[in-house]
Length: 377
View: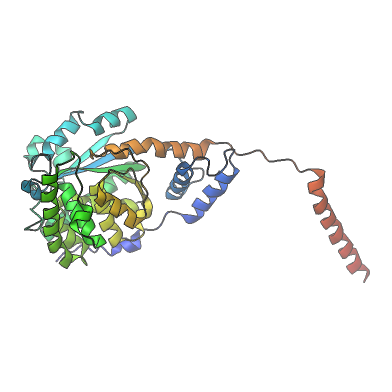
């Protein structure tokens, strides 16, 4: 039995400040560029103002990429174009600067933090800062066994909460959240199908390396089998993560919810993060108000999850690589929205013409006449 009470998040998470958002909308109407002329940048600026409780909105000065990493036992079935247990190598490539997220982060000047939750490699082969939150070595094969014990799921969830607190306490003002996994999109597909009440084929995508038809069929079958195991535990979100999720997915869910508690905006990267966000929405219905969908990755499970949360992706560039790369592409758009909302000048006030002043003068004269008449009576 878990000691973690997920219902607490419903009480702890508030919506972004609606009054501040109305003030931001009013300010936008006074600026020299007509409202709507900047498209979604207007909406983004107002959303940021509400999240920050500040008008004008403050610039995004300390963004950070946070990636949770893990290997999934279901990858042994050949559901991915990458070999099972290969996420550790991806992590090392990111640390060495050779992955797309590394290049983009360098170009944008954004630090990248990787958190190992269940990589299938020796923890001593990774920096201590990466491996210190690890819960186990690899997650279970979800088509035939649980990904985690309930205790491991709670430990992973709490690790995600702790990382969110660390980021908020360090002054991070926006997080690009992603995953580094092999088999993670299969687990994500199970979560989305279970929570949306749909079939495996509806949520099964091609993954980051565009798997062929045979691998797609194996992946679809794995999701179908895991889905049978997921349905009996749908009412308990922590048990759901333990049964068909994984340590990295449980940590991402905890991170998302605690970020909303701490009022720290999060940009969602791909299907794995979207699936965890969907679990988070089940736990605390106000939490998605603190999240932005970065891009459309082409994964049907991601589209299903985002639609259920009413989150519209900012970009549609067909980026399937994961690892936070698509989220980083959206970051300059968010920063541009903040700058425009804060720095565009307001329209000068038009001087009142004599014609415009006449009605007011007549009104004052009528008031004066009524006052004099009252005194006479």
